[in-house]
Length: 146
Image (cartoon, rainbow, N blue to C red; front, side, top):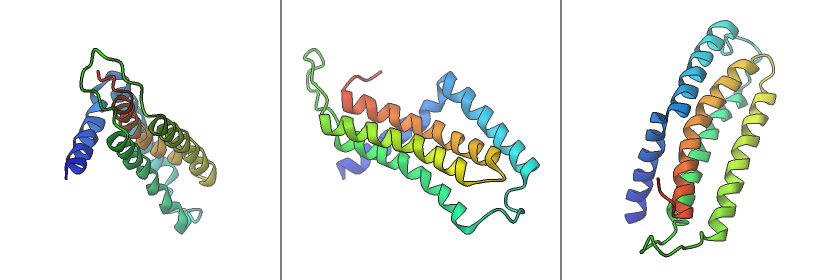
């Protein structure tokens, strides 16, 4: 139960990262771009939309993966004055999930021919939220909290 409450706390902190001005501005810009692209390109009314395009929603699993790495790979700091090195496995898994998230964005933008502006706006909007999870997980793994 302790891991579950930690995961919820980390998820809350990840979403609260949108308060930071760079992420907040990017979120607003991508949300406006997504709305404009949806009006202009009408992706759901075009015959180009394929049933497997709904799998783009699975990109949100990178958020959950980052949070899980932060929970299970947390640096066990008991005394902040003594430096602790992060767990190498957790560091590598977090790097892998980060690169996988960026690669997934590229794949889905490339895959959605005919409405790539919509796809790019949607994925960048989700990626801003996911980067909040990467920041929190990185702080947990390294033990260097803001």
